[in-house]
Length: 217
Image 1 (tube, rainbow, N blue to C red):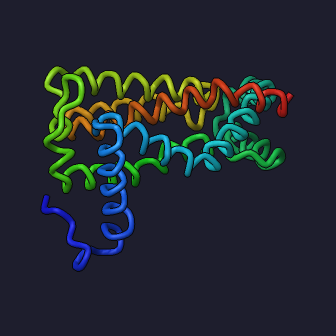
Image 2 (tube, rainbow, N blue to C red; image 1 turned 180 degrees about the horizontal axis):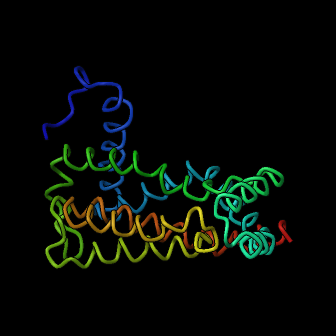
């Protein structure tokens, strides 16, 4: 991809991709490594979407609180799936719970992934840089990073409580496969961002999860 020309760039490139690329460059100038620069920018991005993440955490705790009632409905309507779905949705509406809210923080990161991809591909400094065993502009030749990216995606889903939400459970398996394929094909810098993001989420849940448990208790 050609470097971004601010004079001819469209809205997306001018106001998202280009600033992201500039921030990565400036951070690298301070830290001396694009691998570390991606870490810092990842933390910045995750702090920006923190309100969405907190909303997701609240929703996950609410879903956990409803599990006993949901189990009763499954037992009562085990031979009538349509009635089970209707009663489950009524239960969600009664308690003002959105069963798909837990997927939002992961889905909201997909446009960020696209922005990172374009910022990396259009910035030759990043593409030509090394970090650990990786060349950031190319996929990991040893497939270590794709496996780590997929593994941390799955662990993040477990930590977020998606295994206890039947409506969101499919994402636990779909997203790791999707991320593995992306990391297998795309530049290592992109997979590195995803790994950092997953680790940030798990640390965040470690420190904030108990607070939501107390609120829901």
